[in-house]
Image (cartoon, rainbow, N blue to C red; front, side):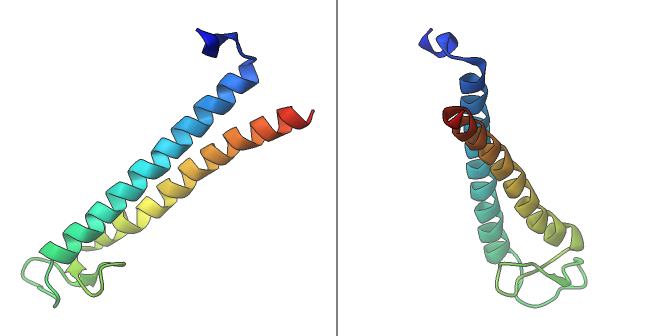
Length: 99
């Protein structure tokens, strides 16, 4: 119950830092898992029959679909979103300690 005896800004700071940190970690692990999967399972040369004609970023010349390439690049946006949440929690803590 010690957690609830704190000031509201301390609770929000802890929640934001926890959500932001865990989100960054999950997105990072998921992105590396996808990079590994695409590097292992996708061909090194374009395969028009299956629609794998777009080079997938970060896989060193594995080919896939446009959607796969876009989803892998989109994970970077999610990482920065969670990083901003983590930064907001840290900023609240620093601001309140200063005041």
